[in-house]
Length: 333
Image 1 (cartoon, rainbow, N blue to C red):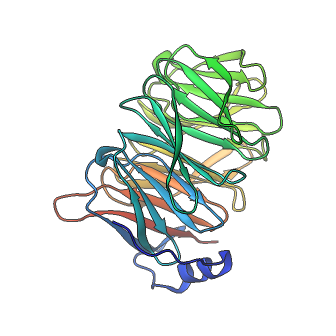
Image 2 (image 1 turned 30 degrees about the horizontal axis):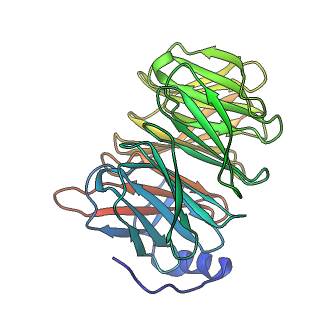
């Protein structure tokens, strides 16, 4: 499904998001206001990770169960293009210096590249198996992809060559890049650990043992030098010191959590869960207090917080009554 492109500025896109529709739902104690739902049309199965092209104000969605990636114009609030023929796309990442979209495919372990404006195919890299999360280091112009039974591939964004290959004890789930220390923090749920890797040499600096299961989601709090890890069994958010892995705080969360983000402007944490909620936590020193539990839809565990837009975007998979959709939330003061 393809629609004509239309160029819009960042300012006009934000205005469109703010004024294009009235608020759909808001509880008295809510800290997120639901502004709109964007239908994804005929998309079936699980939706995985998302990314944003901020200059074009586009949301990129890995539709794993549908073997597609959708491109949503956030100003127009509509799908403008869909990339088909993929093989269980899990991770997506947009790298601005090369204007390239990277798509990691689970079924064949391939990394597919597409031109940023038109999404024409632009080559690929074979990683072997289970290509998953993608992180873009815009400052270093590198792209990092988790894959296989335990590996991170580090690519030069300009040449697309692999410049580093990091070996891990188990398959990597969410991981975060520390721009200051050049470290990479990696969730290894099968090993019940978080690995700390030197981003320059690829060597493992430390392994923090985890005493709970299902550590899939992770976020980095650069202001406070902390790593946030969310567990599924039992549902819990734990906070660790970036320097040594010392646990700082723990708090209960909603179930089947998959994505986690820090809102640096408001000192908040957003956690999206397949149980059908977004939990919002306030950060007060070393205390993490839940402000609100926002209802979404069962299975809507994938989200993306875009500071450039000041919006939290939640992906709800299709049901027998409703098509798959992106829910746009505006954080309230």
